[in-house]
Amino acid sequence: MSADPPQMQEIFRQLGGRRVKLGQGVVGKTSRATLALFGLWAIIFCRLSDSPLLDTVLLGGGVICTCAYGWWVHRTQRFAAENPGLALMEGAQLLEYQKWEAGIKGLPALNSPIIPDPEKSQPLIDAESQGA
Amino acid sequence: MHKFLHVAIGFAEKEVGFEQIQKLFVEAGWARYAPNCWLIHTTESPTSVANRIRNVCAQNDSIFVCEVNIDNRYGYLQKEIWNWLESPTG
Image 1 (cartoon, one colour):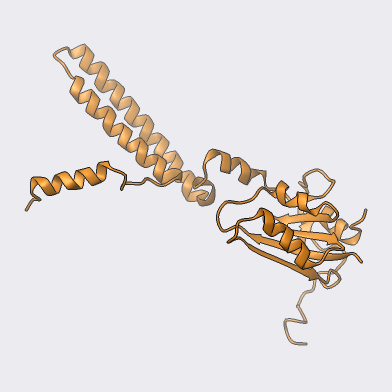
Image 2 (image 1 turned 180 degrees about the vertical axis):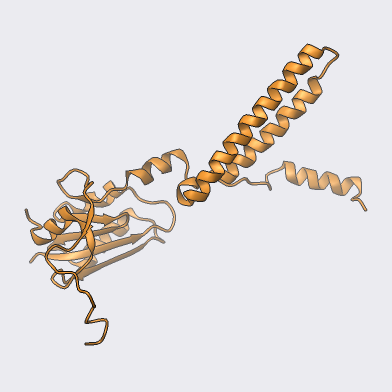
């Protein structure tokens, strides 16, 4: 079963229009890059000629680009799995996110380790939570 | 009379720069211990502080300000913040 041409045209029109919205972050960027890769291969196939040398250069370039793309996607997907929050951010957002530091008015950014309240001894059992 | 207030802001959409928030605490000492949480040492009321923060935040951002009994406390923070809680005026 196949859709009749007008329906297909409508589907492609919608896909080509503004209804397809790629998200931000790794998934969105990867989707765009994948579309660009398809475009690259389409250009390569269109430019294939009778010249073996030119075809080799074109296909070799395509293979190199595809390998580099695969390597990059693998790296970014792994990074996204390990750092989901960071992976969703754009560059400026990432800088802002990394800028978060504890601080006190009039003092430089705090980089010291987190410690328990030095004025209070750490309770072995929280008496209040036990209802004592 | 000075007291400690806890300020928490839940940014619904775009986060307001923390420098912009901290500029509101001109008269107060403050310590920021989490991305959207501050302890401030001030004579202002929670209502006054919350209303001033509201002016720089989006309408659907949540803002919570309350007085803190700093003597009844425990937690895990940087040493400098513990020191500041003990002596907020330096």
